[in-house]
Length: 182
View 1 (cartoon, rainbow, N blue to C red):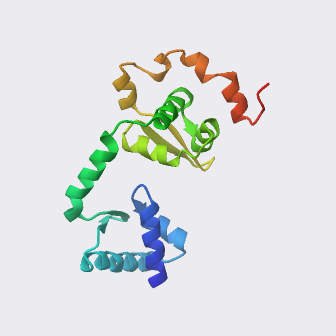
View 2: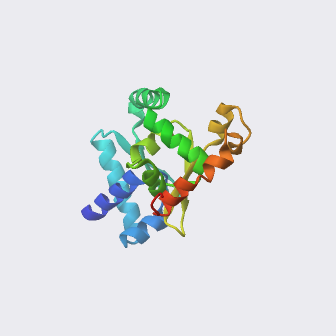
View 3: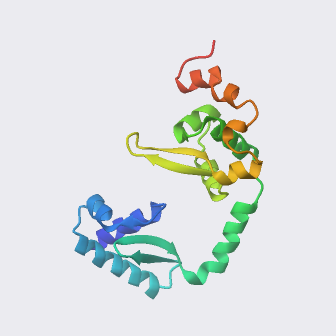
């Protein structure tokens, strides 16, 4: 059970959303009853040891969340993370997502020439972009949010300056297709 608890803790930690019991059972190759027992034990451990996280349960869905007694600390952290100004790299990535979205992280990394994982996280925290997972391609695609478009005072991203020209720019297309620029 100890290894199962560790596996479930890791899954809940990396999941960006609540996890279904059946999905955890499938991933760990454990029976649903064993999953429930391990999650209950893990939840009790968190409360007994006064840890900073808890497991929230709703029917057959589970999620790792911060402990309620840490709410003020978390609010302060989130405020600092989401209210700060965007860095130049974040603005560059946001511009690429606005003009080229929906776009996969791999393509954004290729265009910018650097790993954009932290930038994407920051933009997600700011509520400027959203990610949608494509099961067939096993990839998350990012696009700007309605709030971003509304903030700019436009009705759609296609109203951005020179949208069609920049969206279909030949050099970007070649870069994404791994073709050298002439």
